[in-house]
Amino acid sequence: MRTLLISILALFAGLAAGPAIHADAAGMDSGPPPNARPVDPDYEGGKKAIEAQNWKTALDSFGRVAAREPSNADVQNYLGYAWRKSGNLELAFKHYDEALRLDPGHKGAHEYIGEAYLMVNNLQKAEEHLARLDKLCFFSCEEYRDLKKAIEEYRQRAGK
Image (cartoon, rainbow, N blue to C red):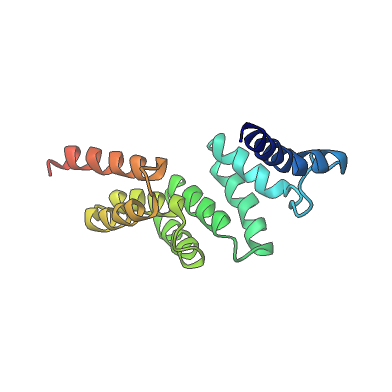
């Protein structure tokens, strides 16, 4: 019986190690995955501009990416964020709405549009997006926590 158990364990160990050994021997563990997209300098430049709070550069960079990739929800979300931070809420809402049309489960867009709704004193719409995030995040996620905190701070300021 003990010999059978050892044989079974050895078999499972060999099966588990086999793909890793094969992948390493084939050189598959080095370099980018075969379907990896090349780095887009405009996309990366836009992200760096966001980090530096350089909204004009972010808008220019992400605008070029959006022209090439109109169905990219992440780019639409970044455009909404940069427009919101630069003070143009009308364009911010336009891009957040587009991000959510392209990807209704885009957590970042739900968070940011909720924050934009607070800026125009629409607590109800912000709470709708918080409820959507609550459903999207199996456990609490950063986007949910951030929007929840923003809503709590809004309520304190507004005395609600």
